[in-house]
Length: 472
Image: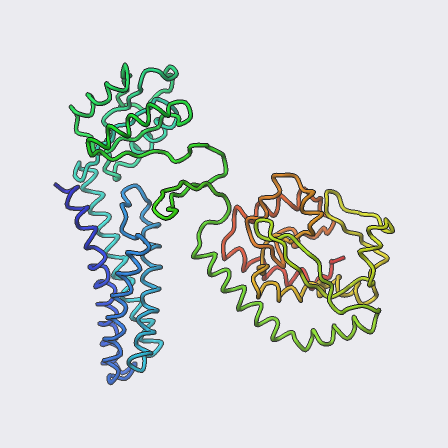
C-alpha cells in the first residue's frame, strides 16, 4: 500500500537526504582539488566536514520536525525548510573541519554547499512530483470523513477538491442532529447526510474505510458531541483533525505547544518566524555595536557641545514602554533645558500633536544645540546602547513615554508585540506632523508585513530622511 510505504519512508528519508547533501559536497571538493582550485592535502578535512554535515543534518531535521507529514503543504515551503537545514548543517561541517582538521577553504565550502543543496532540493522536487502524480491517479489515498455542515466544512471540501495532489478523498460530509439546520451548500460531488444522533456516528465509521475524521462542529455549542466523537475515534484508532480556534478571533494565528507534557493551543498575532527574529537580533547587536564604536569620537564632540551650550547632564534619560509593556530607561542626548519635564507639567508649553503624543515645533525649552540635534535626529543616536542591551531594535515602533503609551486606544497596544526601534515607517513620512492615529496604523502595518528585507529597506531610507533634516 503506497500510503503505508510513504509514511515508513519518511522516517528514513532524513538519512537519505543527509547523504544527498554530503555526497555531492564531497564530490565537488574532490573535483575542485583535482582541478587545482584548493590543496589536495586537505582531503581529511573534507571528510571530517562531510561526516559532521551528515550528523548535523539528521539531528537538525529531527529537532525541527522537517519530516512531519506535509501532504497538504505547498512545495516551496518544504524546499525552504530543507534549504535552511542544509545551510546550518554545512556551517556545522565547516566548523568541525576547522576545529579538528585545520579547515577547508571558503571556496571549497561554498561550492560544496551549492552542489549538495542543488542535489538535495532537486531530488525532493522529483520525489514530490512523482508522489503527486501517484496521488492524482488514486495511489497514496487518504480518506476523510468531515463532521459538521457549515462554512468550515465547505471550505475544507473545496480546498481538497482544488488540489487532487493532496491525495485526499472526502468520503462524506455528515452532520449530527441537534445542531442548527444545514443550509450550507457543499461543493459539487461531495455527499452530504445528517445523522440522527451521535451514536449513529459509531455505526457509520464501523462500516466505512475512514483514515481520518475532520470535525468542523462549533466548539462552544457542540462540545459534548465533539467529546463523544473524539472518544469513539480514540477507541477505534482513527485519527481526528480539529480546527484549533476554540475562540475564533480575526487576525490571530494558532500553534500547538507543550507546557511540560500538557498540550496547549496558543493564539497569537505579530511575527512568528523565530528564526528570522533571531537574525533580526543578530543584526541589531552587530549594527549597534559597530555604530557605537564608529561614532564614539562624534559622541564625545556632541557631548561637549551639549555641556557647553546649557547647564545640565549630557544625556537625557526617560522611562519608556517597550515589548509587551516592559518599562526601560531610554537614553538620548539632552536637547532641552535642564528642567524641561517640570516646565511641561507646569503647563508652560502647549502640545501641537493630536492623540496622546506630545510634540511642539518651536518649543521654547529646546536649546540652540538641541535644535540642531533634533533637526538631524542626532539626539537619538545614543539609543544604539538600548539596542545593544536588548531594550530596543534598530527598526520597530517608536517607544512612547509611560503616560502617552497608557493613554492610547486599546487596539494600539498591539504595537507592543514588536521591540521598539530607532526608526519605523512613520518616521520616513515627509510630514512630521502626521496624525497620531495614522502613526499608529503605520506601526500596525509594519508589524503585519514585517520581514528582514523590510528592516533593511527602512534602515537605508532612514539615512536619506536624516540628511533631509526635517526633524523637530
